[in-house]
Length: 282
Image (cartoon, rainbow, N blue to C red; front, side, top):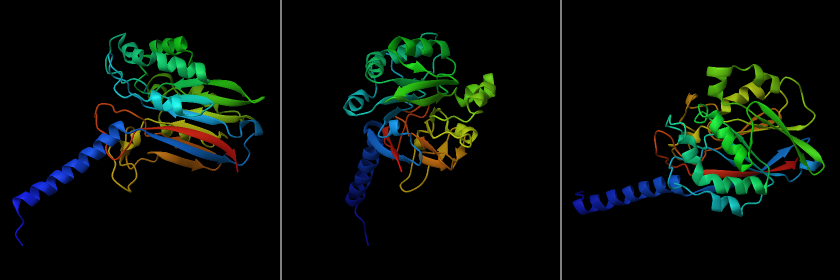
């Protein structure tokens, strides 16, 4: 059967339109996830606690915010906010480069910190800009955790928030001594661990932690329908931790697909996300 050139062009145009729509949605169509996470021994004072996670914003324009998530954040209901690294792109070695990337977000970050207790841990893109990033976060009222523990009072009790240095910082610069101390002694508190690269979960999951939040993978950036994450930096092809929930005994890990991109500025079949987790007793 003879196929006309017109039919071929129409079919090609439709396919091209579908591909473009998927690409556009994967770059600009933010998905807000609301997850209920269940625990066997959740303290009563944490029942219903809502935690917002933002990861891998990769702000990279010193003049204009390239993707505005803040209107979405303002509409959500949550009690704590956490930013799990790579808020900047950080490709410049200019001393003021990270601050130029952060300035368009200053007002929104300060408003977030004024609204709820907000915590930040570094990603690999912040690893070489530690002092500038820490100073900025202190100025806007966000707690920068770098192998640190924060006890936050909630409804007459506490939640223990542990923020780690990035995997690249630990492996290339400072070692794991201080990191391992954080998890050496079992705690009676509910422990929420913030990390950028999810492979750190392997080093913490058996220590008695309750929940860990991570990012870094971008969900692989390029995805195919119904298939797992194809590739993640530092984990390679078919990574152990790609996106979504992972479990080890009573410990729960969530890996965010994040918002932005890095050196390869394309996402496909992979909408940017922020997530809100509500803690519940099982």
